[in-house]
Length: 77
View 1 (spheres, rainbow, N blue to C red):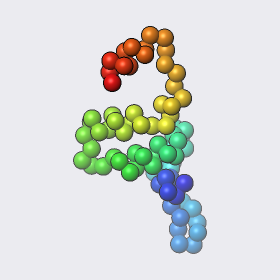
View 2 (cartoon, helix red, strand yellow):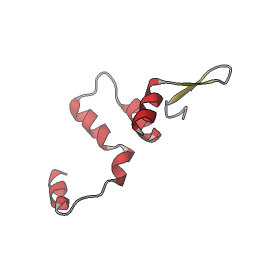
View 3 (cartoon, rainbow, N blue to C red):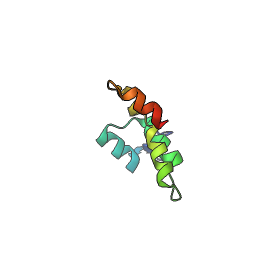
View 4 (cartoon, rainbow, N blue to C red):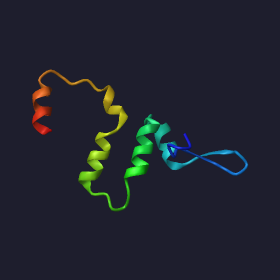
């Protein structure tokens, strides 16, 4: 969780939740998603960049495609 930037380990080995960890916990966000957001989003990120980074979220791996959406998704890609 430290590598995913959800917690901070203090010098005395105490754990402290940081903002991204608190948000991940509240919204049930995968820690890999949090790490990806933390690594890639910065002050210079454009809307296109943000949408691409958001599309990489692990949470989208469990979504099912509805009937007829395959064609539409293929057109978008």
